[in-house]
Length: 338
Ligand code: 5GP
Ligand code: MN
Image 1 (cartoon, rainbow, N blue to C red):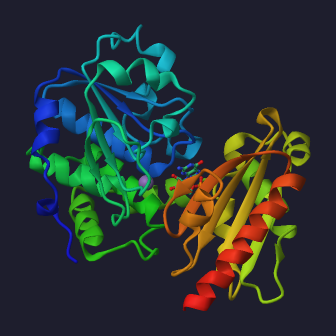
Image 2: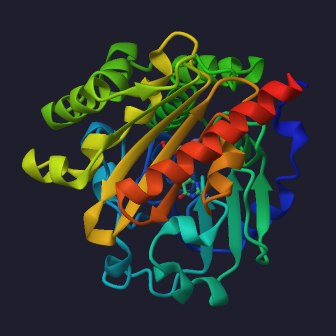
């Protein structure tokens, strides 16, 4: 199927925007390049339409994404009133179709009294009244934002292009994942034509790791474990290790993807023990055909077919065997089908 702007009914979304003046644009916790780039790009576009916008994230912007235009003006939820957005008249969720993904409940103050518009590409969604543009077939939410801004006749310009390009680049792993479709590259080409600096993008998105991250990655990889047939690979960072190295939460981001480097791997799992919350954040990756989105959903999480995650109560020693047993079941079920 060839995707384009005409696959979507953007009119109800346009009408909501047209009827509002002060717009909250909200992304998900542990923000990544797509939720940030899509939110900031949408914000720039809506400002072009004469709207006032506030981009709101519960969690801090990771250092390597702070180069995105507008990242410095992102607000925390408790800063909204002082910034003059207590009387916002539209709420837009970007890259998260469930309210729970926006954080620890701060959004509940706004949801009952504001019209809700959602742009997302995750399968899981809340059953709440909203205008929803959600398509799990898309590589990135930024593809929807690009089409929506085209629909609104917002002209492309370099900063807007940088935001959306960074978002698509992130969620396609630099255009390597199978979610990269013809239209993905067509959109990227249009964005690139605005004068994007590829060297800056690559270095910022993929080659700006902190020493803390590289140390965590090294420790995780040196402790990597696997089944005899290499099909299931896992590694972890426990809470004591993070404490010993004074690791920041973001230092363990992105390690899950590295589990997929081993020859023959089908499912990769990374465990991040979070002692303060008494939980383990589990990140899962799967080769084509291996639905790790379903695996994460078994534990109350979600995500995509090939990349998913969940947070489970308990210590690493408690959580790891449960998840690995479920991952082995998924391997068996999938291979019985293939
Ligand atoms: P990661 O594990 O790398 O943080 O996330 C991989 C994918 O899974 C992302 O698309 C992310 O949105 C999704 N994901 C991660 N953790 C959760 C979670 O706890 N709940 C849901 N619904 N999705 C998650
Ligand atoms: Mn995304």
